[in-house]
Length: 160
Picture 1 (cartoon, rainbow, N blue to C red):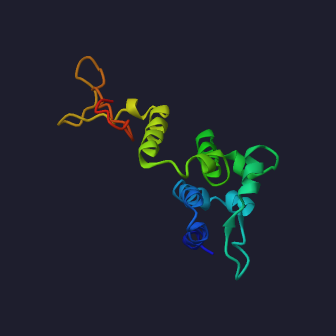
Picture 2: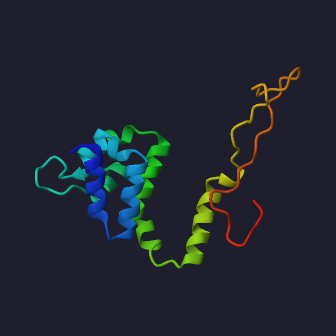
Picture 3: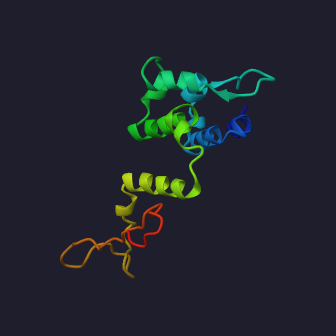
């Protein structure tokens, strides 16, 4: 199976279970399904003709807790955080906590995650002047950058 076929097969496998759909989509969009170590150690059945691939969440949990060795652990800290979140959505605490939240509470939870990430303090790229310069002539000071809004603002609040 090529990458697109694996991604499509995993989406099909997860369909109907929102927590697994979310986890699988996060794995696909963050690039985990393009990593050989992930595919070899956690995606079951992708190399067997007539078998539908699926994610072995238990094995992934064992890898993430250090109970099983895997090349997956050679990833960066940020990449492993994404993997932990995906695992938690599908087979962990988030998978138990998130389903059933009403829409208003879900919006607050999303705002809390965005805030914990510091997205309300992220800045955009510096904007060059008409001459393409990013520093002031003479002083060498950088132009100020724009403060970006939160990725998901707190509901009911208009300020950052």
